[in-house]
Structures are given as structure tokens and as C-alpha cells.
Image (cartoon, rainbow over all chains, first blue to last red; front, side):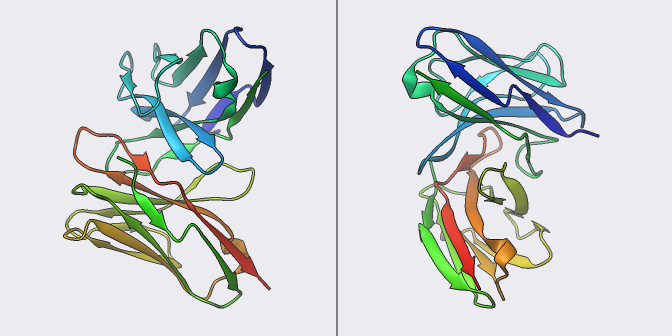
Length: 113
Length: 110
């Protein structure tokens, strides 16, 4: 039982390049989330999904796209990376939203130069 | 809307107690608490639900005042392992996602 895994762990991009971050969970959770964490800002929700085939915008969705084609996977895409997207990205999953805890992946440290 | 946490940072000696507060300007459905150690992912501590139900950690307690739209996390007899950043997250209604505060950095020293 691996829990929540994220790929890759580290990445350096040049401005304008694209990339996809992969999140996978093996707990059969319905809900999945992508957060970014910047110093002093806490965890800010980028996009989330309430089930396979669904996605919704969070607090800071601009510049990101997501897809949830399979229940266990949630992909975060950056089409044209900008230095402002330098951050640590966390994926999380939960069985339900309001009354169940979120399980976080180990994070991806992304640097855009 | 992001909840407000206070204090922003606190330093304790082992064995001392601490209280971390979380407040919202909107009515709350539930409050969640997480702890994050440096370089690691956040880890769940506790959920407090409207109506008083509480689920979570055995050595850390919390309160939820629905009328004041506030929650407090109580850490008693602190240990070195309590060091980290504590985040509260709030849910306002059934269709809104969890929103985290900016965090409270807790340092426990010997």
C-alpha cells in the first residue's frame, strides 16, 4: 500500500517549457487535489476532482490544467511555465471532502528559470 | 476565503503548553488541522465537525466554536517532536473545498 505517490520529485524547467506532474493513489479515494506551497502562503488549492472524469478550479488555477481519466490518477499540466510557478506542489486524496482526512504525497519541487 | 491563524510563530520549551487559533469570517461546516515538518508533506491531525463531533489525534486536542467561527488547537506538555508548521483548513459548506490558512510555525526546544 503506497498511499499517494508523485512523479517526479524534482524538476527544473526553462520559461515557456511544458510539463506534466503525475499523482497516483491506491486507496480508492474519490477526491483528489493539487496544491502549491510557497513560503509564507500556506497551501493553496490549484484544482481538484470529485471523481473520475471530473475536475474543478481551486483558488489559484491560472496557468494550470488537470485531468482525471482514471480514478487513481490525477495529472497536473503546465503548458507554458513561468518563473512565478516555481513552487513545491503537493497532491492529496481523500475518501470524501468535509469529514475525512486528506492524505498527501511527498511533493514535487519545481523550479522555473 | 483563507482562514486566519494566530500566532504566526511560537517557541516553546519542552513540557510547555501552546494554543493555536484559527478564525474565519464565514460560517464553518468543519475545521481540519494538519502538521508539516520541514521538508515533508502535511500530515492529518484532527477534524472538527459542526455539531461537535471530533476525530483525530490522541495527544492533541481542539475546540470548535461554531458561533464565533473559530477553532483552537491545544498542545499540552509539548515534546520536541511537536515542532513543525501547523495548518488549519476550513470548509464552509457542502460544495466548497477545504481552504488552508498560512500556518503557525511551532518550535520546541530542550
